[in-house]
Amino acid sequence: MTTLVIGAGIAGLAAAQDLTAAGHKVRILEARDRVGGRIHTDRDFAGVPVELGAEFVHTSVVPTWEILNQHRIKTHYINQQSDLWIRLPDGRLRTVGEEVCFSGVRALGWPEAQGEESVAAYLRRLGLDAHRAPYKMQEYVSDYGDPEQLSARAALEFMLDPTSEEGDYRPLPGYDRVVQALAEGLDVELGAVVDTVAWGGPGVTVILKDGRAYSADQAVITLPVGVLKAGKVRFLPELPEWKLSALRRLGVATVLKLVYRFEQPVLPEGVNGLYVCGGLPDEWWSSSKGQDYGGEVMTAFAAGAKARRLLELGQEGALEAGLATLRQALGRPGLTPSARTWSQWQDDPYALGAYSMAVTGATDARAILARPLEQKLFWAGEGTASNAWAGTVHGALQSGRRAAQEVLALRNPTLALPELARPAAKAL
Image (cartoon, rainbow, N blue to C red; front, side, top):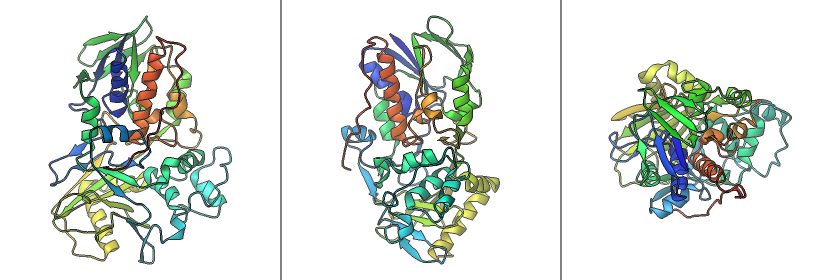
């Protein structure tokens, strides 16, 4: 059988690897001049790899570890309880573990969400708010922003998933090493911008912007939710209403990274990050800890309303605002970087946003988006992952493998589609 995979992000590469291993003829069509999608490692900014997109492996029990271990990719572990500082509104610096309101995710015995209430409404019902909640809920709100829009049901799926309880790991050689390992041996055509997916005949024909056309028995669509929502790729016939409705209901997160290179260390030994209550932005971490590097690369992260406020300032204005926040948080008014840059996906024509967002009324939208169409169009990407794993590399990876299993089941209708294993692993 022949399969076209649209998109060479982690989901497309995972689907292609599994299908190729099963004997399928697979071609990946990628619009960019590189593989990886929203994984993008910069090797020119500093003496260490700097991630302009995805940066962390979240916990040691996600499938990304299969690749890390197989290719002996070393990581740096961040313990969220002891390695992260919080700057409280009164100016005190505490670790996450010391500050009670940032811990105890399961100890609270979270009640179920009522209908499609928002995260903000849910927290108010519990007598909390986005700044007085366990750290994991604050992390979720920080990653997406806009608690008045976020689905509480989806947030609880994330918070109560076992993979949300541990710290994070940063691949030291760069996340692009994971991408390169997964892309090895695959047929990838770069610069292939898709215009039309025609699926009304016996198979699927994909027509590129330059007029070239490719046909196959089926296609795996891994386009970002932002691109699908914007209608940048035409489907003939049009996608059914139930699929379009799922797309309309899903949001796309506005996210901004500010990155600063310092010639001297900024954070004390053993401190990997900083959460600044009320800061603009509020979430900071070192992107160079664990490396043999004399200076320090600091990354700031903002999402939702805070990201939009910074974007309105323009690149230089946003970088100045972020630096002012860091100086105040550390009490170092003279702190000056030797270089600085930003990263945002909103204006990227092949992303149109950072990652999918389950707003109120969209708790089931990702699962609906993932459903195949007439055994011809299969769907993968972080926007088709579970609410607990959406917006992550491991969610995208798992979705690609799930889509490959669905395609393989066409040849063997009795093939069971069990939940893919979550291998335990230790950092190298």
